[in-house]
Image (tube, one colour):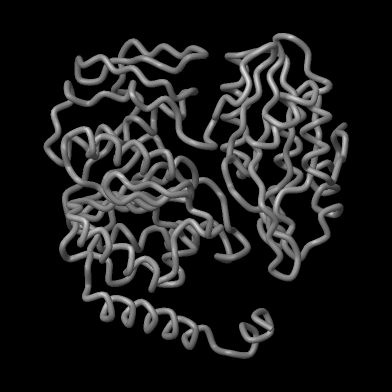
Length: 400
């Protein structure tokens, strides 16, 4: 029905509907963002991690902080999982959350802001002080009608923010730096000294200050740099920024099993993110067992064979399994990911994880991607079943 209505109703009608919802929500909750410093984080990959790190820095500096990401909700010291299967909540939910943050005495809100959310005007009537870009690679291409449209949708956030912070290493950096009239800041890995990566994290120097993070991989160094730049823009002293207390980010390169082999769970659901995860996995072991699927049925079909080919380049064994098929045939999704590569196909995700653990030998690394810490698997007709890759791994490891 939803697809049918989109075909017969003009686009401007839907746009007005979404705008009206956003305005109504803001009115009902009395425009709460006016009493908060809102920091919006957008990009293709790394958004949730950067939200997590910025929130950590602000808390560490003594500010009462709220945050929304695909991982969790946070108001001050209260944290609860985001089980909506929606990174950026709907207009009423987000306005209500901000009102609750104001009542709780929060000064900051760090908000993961998605292109789908912007497209549906969920960002409207939110007083963004700062907008942060992590990176930009193809995603939601079918939904937006092309990469340029996707980029331009993201750009709407940077037109309204008073301050913008851009990853200068990203090919799209110049486009975003030309948007808006506010203060413009950049960060770049080229400004680092003494970068060292290992299986326990990374260390580097930035502006002659030494930093250490427990987060794995070079791409997480970029995420830490984004958080540092936000901190500097808010007047925090770099020598006071400590990331070592962040032991990890839930579902993001999260080490679930350490011995006799390593098992990592990660949210990676784009080709770029998947390749970076595999590159980081090589720090642990030259032998990778990959369990993957392809993000939500009915969207971004173009990336399925590409993700399969990336897995074939890095993995010694590949198991392709179900992820979030929604109303699409999960076997057809699996076949598209497996196109042209040698891989085992197992629809049942628990069974696929079990098979990977059985196959793993001492010193190997099992990399399970696509869902991270998501609490649901979404099937046809709106059906959702409880799920957590990390929980399944622990259960199957115990029974191994």
